[in-house]
Length: 296
Image (cartoon, rainbow, N blue to C red):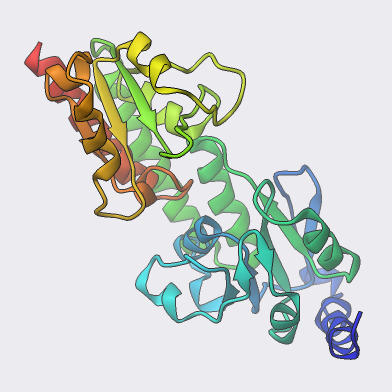
């Protein structure tokens, strides 16, 4: 460890040690089932995933976020937050200069050894890993508790949960539509039924043709998709307007989804991030699957 980083590590302990007033202590359980406590509402939060950054804003704590990783681009104000590296390679020196009193870590995305180092320093670290609509709701409640913004966060959580239930009721008796959802192009990847994207599919009356595969994000070959022959293919892309992946399926005219022009694009940040905007992507997906039903 060089002297600069050593000095920063020592300095980072100051806010953690200072936040020790039991009377105002706020504690929640994170997604590792670890109790995370702050001595007072967090004022200097560092977010280590774009999704966590969005959720902090939705929970009313956006103005408290003093550091975030690259691609933390929503809402617009998030673009002005200082960067602390990428989600898979953190810049610890920069992070520690920000003197965080709370770090929101991405359980499966951040380098474990770097996050563990923050924990050893005594910085409160909340590990997040929303895997469902219900997880998003509870994350909003918990982040608001840590930030002392319960009035905003609780309202956002309730509004989100109510809107999800409205969609669920609307499509609960809809005719099933088989679909393939593409999350990556090279290698070709999808999701299984334990992923929140699959929950969005089921909510809309969709059937994930690869839902029973054991891996959360399975890698496939083209032949597997051709054999499954879904009624619809839905894809994200490399950007919010990049429809290249879905257009590429036109090379296979015998596919049912291609033959019937049921190839759909959804901006990836609205369906591939576990945030409140997942509701936007889900509504888009429901509309697309209803178009398949209407055409049959």
